[in-house]
Image (cartoon, rainbow, N blue to C red):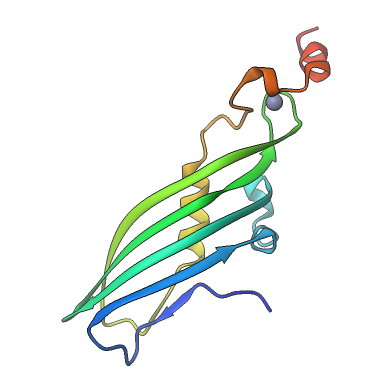
Length: 130
Ligand SMILES: [Zn+2]
């Protein structure tokens, strides 16, 4: 069964709630256009339910494997994201799957390359520059 990333608010009392989710390799199968081959991340959420509103502090930390734009080898990039969201309590639940996906994509650099050029595949670099 695929993990869900849904917080159900209905019936929650005022207070602070914590959620910890994992994003694993299976997550990326739904997003082939992302270019992410594999990836693991921890999603930690602190949620404060107050009168009429909900505040979420979200932290995502992990790494993903993509194809290096420079040498086409696989390249692992770190992912780190912190954010705060507020929402009205009128909704019954909140599905954070799309949010998690977009946050990880936005946490990646525009140019997806090995951080150090020395980590790139030398054979391939030679072929490209020739
Ligand atoms: Zn590279």
